[in-house]
Image (cartoon, rainbow, N blue to C red; front, side):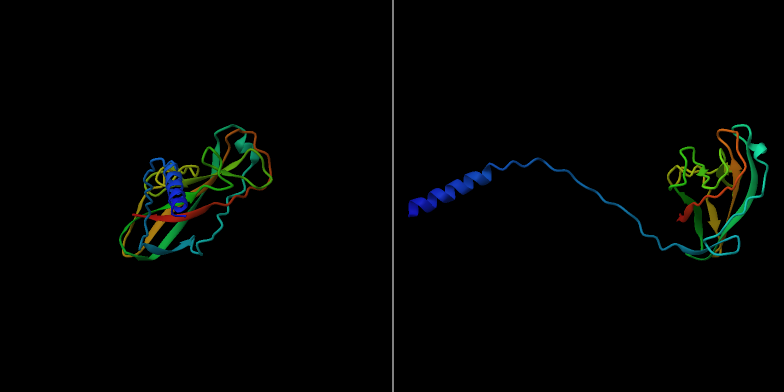
Length: 178
């Protein structure tokens, strides 16, 4: 009986040695939590607002590359903690984001898109298809717990030949603090 137990132990030990293990690697997980917060309102309302573009003739967008109907809007930040620093809007890519960085029209007009423009320190077209920091969003200083970020929305056409109809789109944004 002792011989059988020893044989069984030897077999199990040998089986365990037969298991192969490959060299692993290291997984580093990083993140950041920020204490920065502000109350956000758009054009004097809440953080969820509507920017009404003017009515324009479809014939104004007969040629590719045309833009028009530039309509300014603001994102006002108040009660910021800390009360200094820098901030910009990060426009989140989503179902309405086109590869060229413009926003897809979900209305009935064809061959027309919506383009966002940052007008905080000069005029820069926002490319919503890019990551935060690569969209052309410009930093604005937070002073005394307040900041006003200035943007515009406008019609644009990549293809030309726009047809009459409605124009509608939605984009989500978040505040990026430094």
